[in-house]
Length: 525
Ligand SMILES: Cc1cc2nc3c(=O)[nH]c(=O)nc-3n(C[C@H](O)[C@H](O)[C@H](O)COP(=O)(O)OP(=O)(O)OC[C@H]3O[C@@H](n4cnc5c(N)ncnc54)[C@H](O)[C@@H]3O)c2cc1C
Image: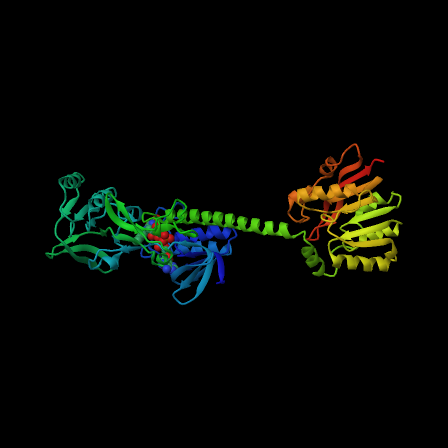
């Protein structure tokens, strides 16, 4: 068990495991805490679960647990005592004192069947004391079935079970007298009404054989049907402000459940419920479906939260990534950031130019400036980072061209270069938010002397489709055509506005092709 999960699921029955499966398959970290007492544990088989009809309840859960853990979900045995808000998380405390935090909670703790207090009922519960004809009706077909009336729903129950057997008796026990309508319906379906309280069940060997009435008479039956009050097992939700509400059927309260929407979302943000705790009528397959719906909804909620968080992070990143401090941190975090080789598009374009005065914009560790100086250019290398400029100066010294380069510490967005002062202005991979970029490029263009060359190279937007893992800032990438469109054709001749492929190696070591946006423009004389 880890300290924190995306989701803690409380209860590992059909609902909890189905929710955990959906979440684990959605690559969420998920922990199921299960007390190991599913509601149908006393029953021999699960029925009406398509493709699994007749499976022993425990086998179904073993298979479910295997599926959850097979996708990386964690399951621990234990009982959760409390769940409480803890900032944006929840803290879940187990009875043995262990605690775990979760971003979301899925509570699938089921319900408690409150059985009538008749000796033998609890003992035979789920075996030959039954409640649900869809669970046991087929197996009890044509047998003698005594419906133990403990409330007004008994007539409805007797009429239901009559569908499975012609031998149904209504044991009136302590229920109110029948209305004439009820009596007529029962008579019409040949259901015998047995008056008088039931004292206890008659059990012989390992089987129910009858019910003993208060007067000592024994009525022979093969099964007794009861209508337990179904109470949501929701104590741990009280601390979060969630309490069960009554559930009515035919105008009578039959149990309680935690109110939730169709996905299981409760009124408390971050808390979902599924299965019998949210729907007292849910059969196993319905409980599982509820768990799946809740798991999917929780994942959707987490996706929305993850996206909000990513937007916050990105906004902060964009707001701070181009500051002098950010560049200083980047350069000082390692001995060298760049390869030390001149940029290939600079080499391609400047090789044929007559050397003059060059401005290297964002000169970094100096590879481009040194290369230009070695070819006879008089270079100004401008950068926002002092660390980068110091490294560049060292490289220029080592290359013997220190006297041909002036290093300028400047943020060219705020300290624009002198106008018409350079025969070549080279900006390699300057990626800024759109407005800032256009303003800077306009100033760089203004710095080009008549007859001079403006060379702007950037990562082309199509690099985002490759595995190059460029920073995902599509609005900061640009095409050469976009840059060219901002240049006045009366003053500029576009020599090249192209996307140029270039071989590269991606972070996983694969050979790939990346794409440079290359603008070469000559300032008309
Ligand atoms: C006798 C009987 C026979 C049934 N037969 C059928 C049938 O044939 N077909 C059918 O479709 N349905 C049948 N049902 C209904 C079936 O039991 C429910 O539909 C099903 O169990 C609901 O699943 P669930 O996940 O909501 O709850 P459960 O299966 O009850 O699972 C809840 C789990 O949560 C755990 N838990 C509870 N509180 C905590 C806590 N605080 N901390 C940790 N864990 C906790 C419990 O121990 C349990 O393991 C039968 C019910 C009964 C009573």
